[in-house]
Image (cartoon, rainbow, N blue to C red; front, side, top):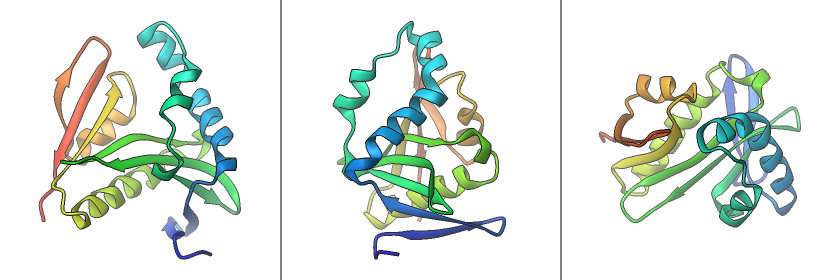
Length: 156
């Protein structure tokens, strides 16, 4: 395990969180498509795969592995005034086991460690993750017809 890899243990299952490599782009794209294609079409009326490619930044992406198999990823970066979550996508079969909550707590810690006091994200209103975000303290600060912008002010 390289220095940048983190071990995550949830329910006696060990996951590895590691920096993305060039070869991981296809996995992240296909998982986003698998999990979100219907939502994009329902909410925006279309799917634009070129948009993902144009906005993909490997340096912001970390891959989640289980038994040496990619099972998810998170795309998170620091802006001037906040941490910003672009995406967390997990294979459907591992959703609901606490991994998403763990990852959210991890980015909160990293944001505080960076000296920033809030995290922002944008999510479709009908995304089941909205329930998780609200449960762990995220509040909607803006909404349009399809999406919410949410933030959490972090307490040291």
